[in-house]
Length: 251
Image 1 (cartoon, rainbow, N blue to C red):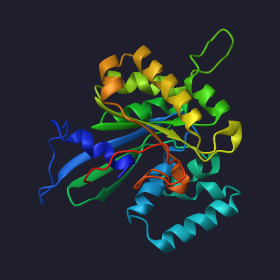
Image 2 (tube, rainbow, N blue to C red; image 1 turned 30 degrees about the vertical axis):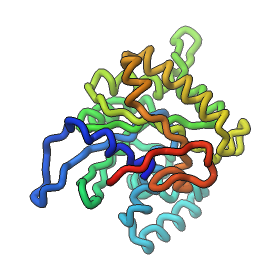
Image 3 (cartoon, rainbow, N blue to C red; image 1 turned 90 degrees about the horizontal axis):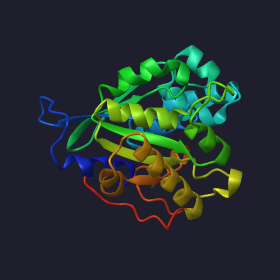
Image 4 (cartoon, one colour; image 1 turned 90 degrees about the vertical axis):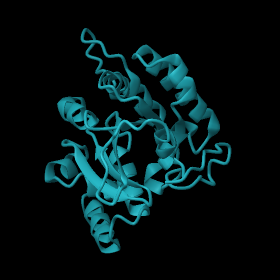
């Protein structure tokens, strides 16, 4: 597995001590990051690939997304099921879904990335054992996501930076960084290793600035290139990014 390599980091002392009646370890994952980083789409795609979304339901979501002129939002609609969320194309509330593997019972929390709903993000993240911090690969979106912000000039602070700080302050120690939208045709991304390295380097620098320990950043926080909507590097290694070898683990 690729994104699900989160389990690899649970082999040590788990933060979650909850256990199901069937003995499965319960693990809660929050998906955080800047607005439009693709959090809801990636989460919806993961659940679909795990068999958690019925084909008839998926067809209805695709039809609804097309009717709204947002065909790429089909997976996101599974998570963002409020009318206001679908109309605005953003997550407002923390939406949770559950799925199971042979060993684990997962709760996945799709947190809002818009700065207006930061309280909701904090509420959702405070319940998590693990965080997936998503960053968009295309240039303008990535720059906006890491902006420091300046009230004098009106520059809005990026939520990648803000969420990195909050996740650390909330005590989450198991972090994964996802470089999403690697399928983007903007800024010559197109599944390229060069763009991945650029973003990976910058995000690691930001994590250090926001209080994460250098040793942990280098040794314990994986940075995974992915294209959530297309399912690339979600459950299996993408053939479109052969330069990234990933890690296989048991989920």
